[in-house]
Length: 279
Image 1 (spheres, rainbow, N blue to C red):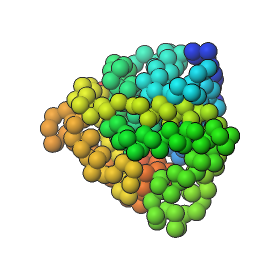
Image 2 (tube, helix red, strand yellow; image 1 turned 60 degrees about the vertical axis):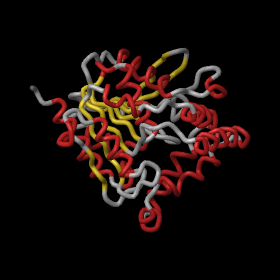
Image 3 (cartoon, helix red, strand yellow; image 1 turned 45 degrees about the horizontal axis):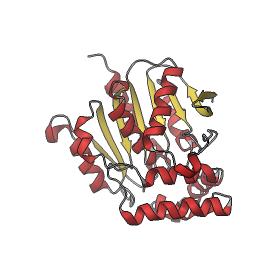
């Protein structure tokens, strides 16, 4: 794969940029990096130009001074991606796919740079802000990773990320996810948690999004349950109930792109083909 480095805002941001054809932007979740999309990148690169960045502070991307203490807001991550698209000379509207925290970022991209997107895929994510208890838990984890000097405290999330069946029958998946989490720097984890803790509730603005949309959710997702994703799909629908686009993925919890990569990739591919089909 072709890894590239993009300098922006005084920092270096890493991305994979492979394949040719209409662009698809894959935005990873927390506490992960673009490696979570390996299966999708490999499957889609034959027909699309696939761009998979590491968000600021995660993977091989760096933080700016002050990010660790202040946190990185979802709108800041989105601004990084808008600048990256300029750097890549991509001026046409694209299809963006956001998983979990990446979905929060994709929503900001759609709301703040609406002409950038022709298609928006929201995978295992939420439009609501955190409740107070969840917000406090994020701050607690941010403090814990900095005190420990490692990503170890973030591993406590692992059981919540995977369906019970995955944990019981696919230890290889759990080990892969563990490896991705363990390679994250504590400063990047802390910055992301602080940023997510203060993110805004955008449910009341979903009808402002002009891009075509698709929601994808693991059937056993306990973090972003199918019922909540369905509510979001309804709010995103452009023409009533007939336009509600929701795919429930079998044999998957929150990490549907890793637990059932074929189903998620097929949904993304079909949707992207529709978005790029000539009018």
